[in-house]
Length: 365
Image 1 (cartoon, rainbow, N blue to C red):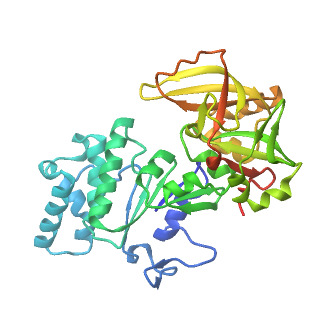
Image 2 (cartoon, rainbow, N blue to C red; image 1 turned 90 degrees about the vertical axis):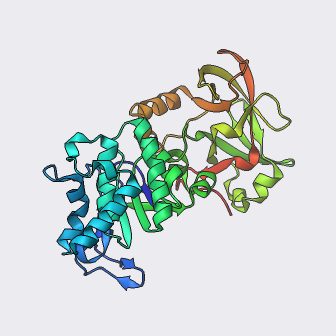
Image 3 (tube, rainbow, N blue to C red; image 1 turned 180 degrees about the horizontal axis):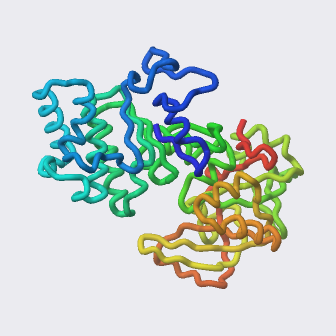
């Protein structure tokens, strides 16, 4: 289970409560069938892996990994057997006589993992263990930790502010905001079915596109009305959201992910927009298009955006003042559109998301 969310949302506090390092004000914490609220941290049989490795600099790698076993007065033969087995698992055998200062950041993180693994606990608690590593090493260590967790089969709670890390590592992810759980579930389910605007904006890179639209209804059905143009909603979109009828003539937030927008006429309802920027990334291109409309500017949107880009709040407010919205279209790398071109953008309608502007909740059933 991966806890993910912006800085200060309560991820580490939740982890520390599970470990017994923070008191809880209400509720229960269970390990299996056992309530552990009143049990000391050392008796909860959980091993923590910290952001800063927390290794003893004067001890060898062997002694660092062995430390929790020696604290339990484990026999010398058992200590050696378990340390050597753990070191082999982590590729640390040749480093056991060295001191931590002689190792790279990734190797030190493996030692910290080894110290947790050697205890054979009921659960691992990991608090942003990769945040001090460079980008390339983080990708490698993500894979190694995921493989280890699968091989060991031990329950693991992992805290990160990096949503890519959460999506790639978690069997389930829990998105938090201001101390409140927003949604939890398998990563792909959360990505495809966000419960509210915050989750939709926070999960995904590039993030989901948003714009405000008025829901209209005529004899032909429902449509989203924007300045100077409309987007007709398919019967499937409407039938999947019976609650839409209550939003006629009201403003909604429309959300659509970059990969769910197509350039050019595809036979479905589309919007006209102007290409403002193109980013060629090799395997794909990101096409930025602008159209007249009202940006979605809310506390949730700003908080989710600022976590990715510190200038996001001012950009959102600027777009709102200009009554202009920028959308991102994920396209093939060999696209022939150019900056300044007028284009049609067609959403894949079954991937369209609609949200209540006041509550931020997804409009579903």
